[in-house]
Amino acid sequence: MVTMRETDEVLGSCGRIRLLKALIEAQKSGYAASMSKLKAATRLRGRSVQRHLEILLNHGWVEEVRTAEGRKYKLKENGKTEAVKRLFRELGYL
Image (cartoon, rainbow, N blue to C red; front, side, top):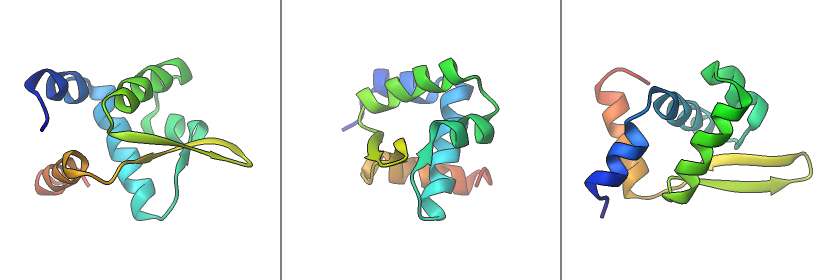
């Protein structure tokens, strides 16, 4: 169950919303996104992307995947992320 505090923290930032959208789009294309791809997709600075990822990782919305090319990130498959995907689709954000 998602608490109101978690929802506020995760969705209360334009940067995190852009990051979630980028991760959803990467997932639809079948890949985990690198930091550079996330920076390009969100047009956020590296430190901002890193800070937002830390929050999403801590709340269990995103997972880190270590590959030969380095760290990559993908959306976790759970009820929280499925609800956000539905919301973004309903709003025409995806």
